[in-house]
Image (tube, rainbow, N blue to C red; front, side):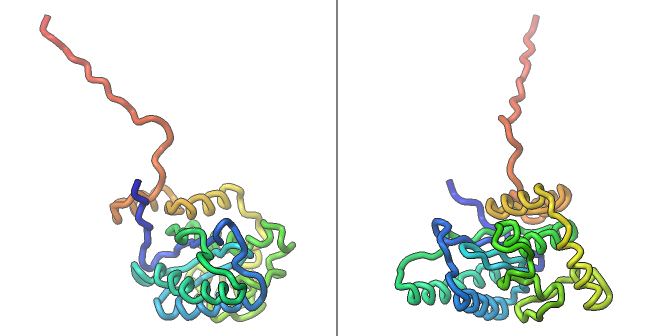
Length: 236
């Protein structure tokens, strides 16, 4: 069965997941994280992709990014693979692939899910039990959003700016959002939909997206297709 084409919508945020092959580690020390972020920064600038949030876990990566065209996101991920994988293989005397297949991506309904997705990404180390609080993890965009450090990789989205009229107000409002518990349903929806390539958003968002793109953007409803029985009426 042919795989479904990846759904990419220019100027719309996308949640991206890239996992290590066999869930093996793709970062082993601080230098590895720094090199990946360097290649990510170079690629995002070159291919005009705005990066809004990220986290680098030991064996996978989450990004929240807006491509300016149909090819920018794919070219960004290819660029990273072209330079980071050889770096990693040389350093650790290994060969072969580093990633588990192609990256996964899902287009995001901005109004409903953008800030939820940003929090989901930056709270990943907390959910995984790696740290007790998001601020304790150095390899994410969290510290930028709460004003603890400037991160040149980050392009702030208009929805982040809508949190307040001043940097301090935005940072404080974002921290309040971080302190709120994400629902289990949001966490599941963001993970499962991204891994399967389905759009993330309201029913109306998905319906409009499917109409505009002529691509299936959500799974079919479970169950057997309805069978219509035709009644034949003969002459008496």
